Image 1 (cartoon, helix red, strand yellow):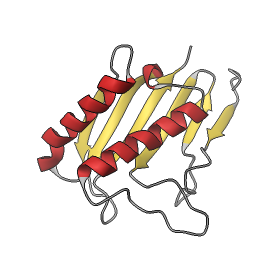
Image 2: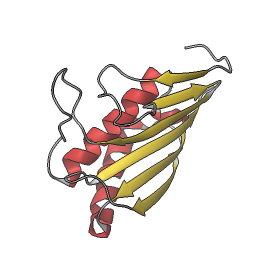
Image 3: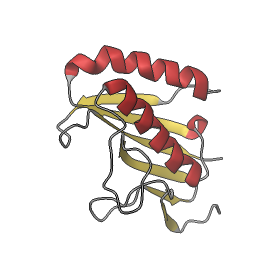
Image 4: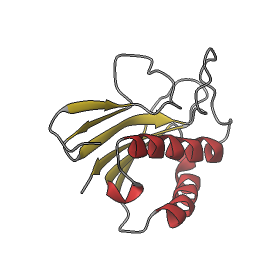
Length: 138
């Protein structure tokens, strides 16, 4: 992907179409913003989006993989990420999220971990976590 200053939408083929008018990711120059991703399994044509499972672990791991897919489609890796924002629906999930998050990034990061903010929100029924990312390439 070129490093031009043109603003370009980034949408992996595995992602369902967003429910409103936004992009899964947007790249401009060496900046890539990944929209909030949730734990939906890869899209199947003609099927509604399906959550990875009812539990925090399955949804968090799938959410991280969905963020990774957008990063890769935009020419980035986890090591290019400066900031992650995590949105949880239940304050009681914070400790479990940190355990899942730490184990995932022990395997997927080679450099300094990104900064992170965690906030508590309401999400559509059945969804427990949403994550967005800001990456700077090069």
